[in-house]
Image (cartoon, rainbow, N blue to C red):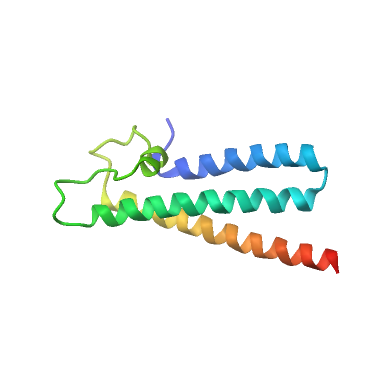
Length: 122
């Protein structure tokens, strides 16, 4: 079975492959395809990071009855396989930090691609 901490990786990889294939088939231009794909993945990654951050910070509140997943996107990313005995604050923090790093890496790639596109147009 899939490791719940790695669902985010699997989702991003599948999304990357689908977007790249569809956009390249349509445009036949690799730089434009990569720019569109990285941009779409960056926005998906931002939504996932915000969702996991909200879930992590919600689990840190001491007045709640226990640890649980606080929103639908975090539930979708972490999965149902990792139910309450496995759900820990460390798991939520690790998932959030992984998603934050992926978002930052995608942001760097996006900036690099934008500079490359700017150089091509000059």
